[in-house]
Image (cartoon, rainbow, N blue to C red; front, side, top):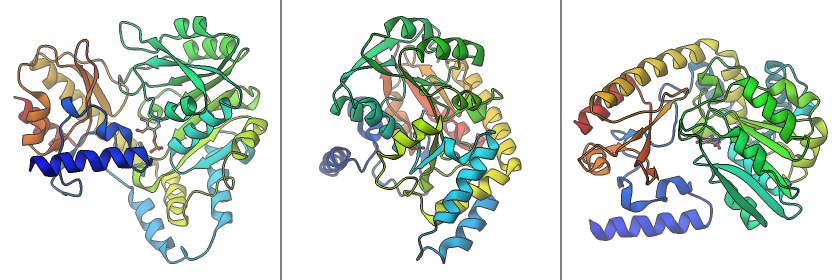
Amino acid sequence: MNNRRTWLKQTGLAMVGVGIMPLENFAIPKSENIIEDKNDLTLIRLQSNENPYGPSTLAKNAMSKNLNISNRYNWEMLEELMEKIAVKHNLTAQNILLGAGSSEILNLVALYCSKKTGNLIIAETTFDYWTVTAENAGLKKIAIPLTADKKNDLAAMLKAIETDTKLVYICNPNNPTGTICSNKELLDFINEATKKTTVLVDEAYLDFTNQPSLSNLVKENKNLIIVKTFSKIYALAGSRIGYAMAHPDTIMELSQLQFSPNASISVVSAAGAIASLKDDKFVTDTIALNAAAREYTIEQLQKLNIPCIASHTNFVYFSLENYNKDFFNQLTENNILGTKIYEEQGKWSRITIGTLKEMKQFIKALE
Ligand SMILES: Cc1ncc(COP(=O)(O)O)c(C=O)c1O
């Protein structure tokens, strides 16, 4: 068994090396629960902030219906998807660039900003796997600590901008902490920061809140890029669809870094995404179910003397400092996939909010 674990870890690290596996799965082996068969359907997956309720019925029907046209390229369907996204955000298709997941877009932005040498500014701790691309392309990373209440420290980030800063990344709400900056706070920040550099706002989890997207700002501001994904609220993580919203000139520059603009989306994924955009009920149901399971989880964690940060997302950040069992061992023994320790000081970890039933199993595993 140990040999198999070692082999799995080594294989995993090799796959991370060639970019096939998400780094997150293998980041800190010592404090992470390792479960061997990831295809095991009984496994409770609370690791990657996926949506347990989907894909929506409309999306599934559209995807299966379009399977049989997968033998053809279908640029028209991609154009339709871009049009629909543009309408949703009151923009035009020239403001939109599609990627195979927002990860592709994040990588493109990293490359775009690395065309000249300099640095990038990012919170410590945030969703930063994609910054490897920027660092490999020559940007130096400047990490700005979160505020005491685990928010992006916008004032400190603004102050940290130097003449050769090429990018500031704001994940809002922030992963892994689940905290949010208000649009007023962000607006003030963006107005100042984009006078000097490019600002990338990642709205992967914004749809779990009632705060609107900042999409309207990209009409005028060439130095603002907003990235969104179908992986979370629309439950299409495995379909790999994300997109950038930016000024048409910026979209043009970004698209030149793709092998063929917008072309990494399959027909089946595009059909699923188009149908998802029509399924408002799925979205409101997901928000309500997630909020109920999240409330339960936070309440129960606090009863276990595990402090939590108030969350605006489908995950919760909590401190294991007072928890005296081996957290990851408890998860592994109960067939639950969690993630890792993000901050050693305070032993902060994150759990994805699954269904209420899954969260009850999670809490039971900790008791
Ligand atoms: C903040 C954030 N941005 C982007 C992504 C990438 O998502 P995807 O590539 O599935 O669109 C994730 C995935 O967990 C995320 O948490």
